[in-house]
Length: 83
Picture (cartoon, rainbow, N blue to C red):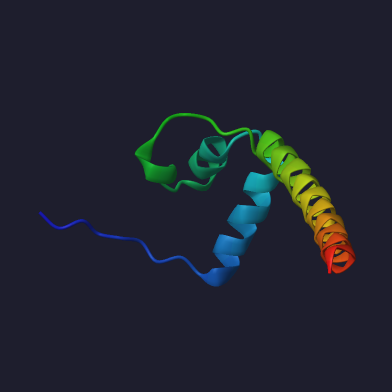
């Protein structure tokens, strides 16, 4: 038995993404749009929490990159002192 797949326009996909970002869960958005939920699961995803965590992780990455740059400069300085 073959599985039929639906084809959605790019505009529909973009609007669905925007709606899911404002929604409490991706599955609720999928249900309201009449499309299958992600991976056929029934679990809910708190999009706000994911976005918040993503923002925090980006901040942490920026901090770590800054610390790395400082340590790299310090290592260069001390390497010159040892010569």
